[in-house]
Image 1 (tube, helix red, strand yellow):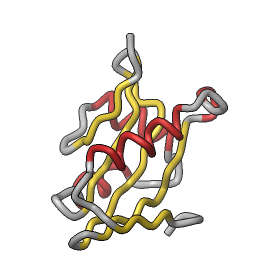
Image 2 (cartoon, one colour; image 1 turned 30 degrees about the horizontal axis):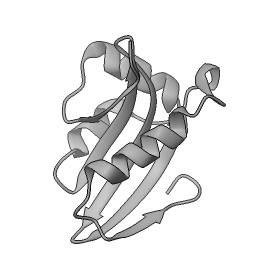
Image 3 (cartoon, helix red, strand yellow; image 1 turned 180 degrees about the vertical axis):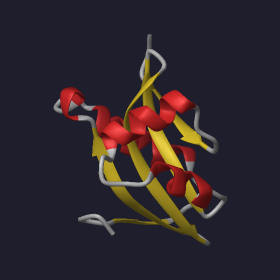
Length: 104
């Protein structure tokens, strides 16, 4: 199967398990409740499993990417770069991008 980048608006039980491995320090249920048009979640999916994720916060034409993370077992294979590039491509109306360093 092909690696796909998806915007997630609702999470399956398996998505919650997978994201718990991507972000072990994050309350996934709380994150899901915050998702809306301004607070988006993008993930890399391969064989029906989530391997990486990032959060995107939108304010007008400004986009802030934070919490970009790839599961340990999948790192160093270009998954994070592909996730970042596809998220930017899928949000063409955003003119000004900012990538947060750290867990802001």
